[in-house]
Length: 133
Length: 141
Image (tube, rainbow over the protein chains, first blue to last red):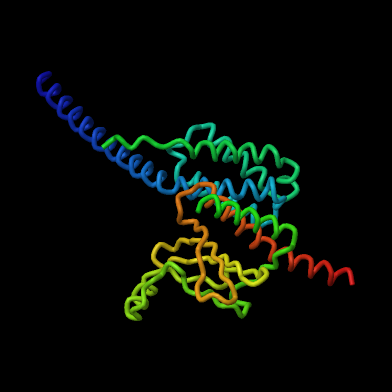
């Protein structure tokens, strides 16, 4: 009887191990695909953020259009790459979105807003390791 | 070319901010962008095939400004396949037959691409400022 139960437990643990392996493999594959996509879009997002930071800091532009573009760029980053983002990145994403709520807020917190954008621009200088295949 | 592109873009930004350049939406103007100087194809079939494959300029989102005896164009290309956009900076003289590209956001120079995007944002945003000042002027008078 005990032998039978141990056979069943072994069988169940084998099935669970195979399931876990397949699931982790699928998650890793998904993360690899995200990293590759990130590399392709990294340049585009980084140059957009540099341009918008200059628009805010040098050109004194903080109208709805600029705020909306900046929000779109930052939210695109968050939506797509939150799984591979460092918690500090997510903090600066959240802080930027908070300061971009309205023009008065953004103007008042201009330096802090630019500091968060600076962090995200610097983050895009880091290339992701693609050597998982 | 990169240094020329950066200097050219920075000077355009400076002149735009000082209101020395007046930008007009391409669709509202009567100036046509001349063919690219580097496009040496003369066979009409090949030219037609190439232009069918290339993204088309979005005239509504493109601008030009007149300066002395020439024009500066900021052309926004919409790609119907990828649904993405590309901005190019071109210049042409009134007497010449061709235009020349000086910068594009499809390039790989970070400074050129970011400054070109910055310039486009200034021009695109200032077109809204014109409407705001018109409405403010209307309210005051």
